[in-house]
Image (cartoon, rainbow, N blue to C red; front, side, top):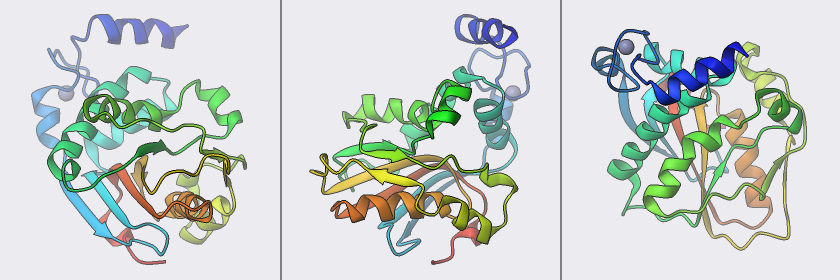
Length: 222
Ligand SMILES: [Zn+2]
């Protein structure tokens, strides 16, 4: 109940910064916005299945705080400023240079979905889809294993945890080039499995766009 009231306040009276809680006309106050570490990262073939990785920010400070609120504190409305960051990044770095037939938000297992009641990667994808007319494909990739939370695992454990955890809906592989969207890139274990599964289903090019990347050193090849 507490969360619902907070959500209603967030949506209709957005007078408080989602990060610091101080008075703000926008979802993120100027002071917090200036602290965001925008990076405009592109790396080709971060692993053998992914054709390229785009990332908008470093996973630190304000961004880390907002992602945490969205994922673990039931603050669904926090996706609003985050989806704006995603869409402006897309406009600046991707639009007109790359072509994607659909956006695939990294799916949640149904157990996790039931608990959180929304998929945060879908929420942060929606503005790009609307602004650039790229359909969101939610039925193509399915999470079949209820994996552990990645954030407490080592690099090796993360890959093992995600191994064979996705399935492709084989009736629906008409796409040549798709864009996976996730909130954070750390070791790349999740997107490695997503891209492997999508390519096994016949999709030729699979790119990944994340809101944030944990740190540049995490970008080593598999
Ligand atoms: Zn603030």
